[in-house]
Length: 124
Image (cartoon, rainbow, N blue to C red):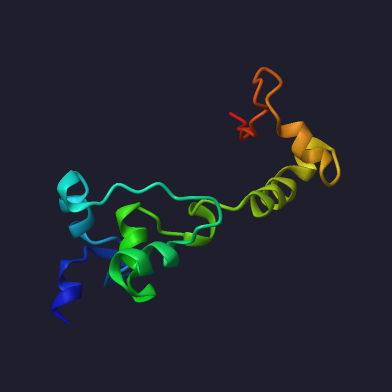
């Protein structure tokens, strides 16, 4: 029970409870220390589980990879392979673009970029 004593107390539906949705202070304490992390570049198609297995010898330590990269939602914050990313762009911008299927991807391309890199459209 001592672990939860470090979480802040909040008011929720008229009751005082521990906010267990907060991340631990440990992440903030070590995040600025470059000697605690290995430099690594994720290659296309590589998953956090692959990196955990490579560095720690087990996929059970995948949470360390997520924590080191400040990733809370591994489904949307981990780099996607090209096809998954394209599917995500199509699903996200179909309505806004007025296009269908792969035409949505063309709609998101930056016409001023020679590499034709996909960029995110952000409405302000």
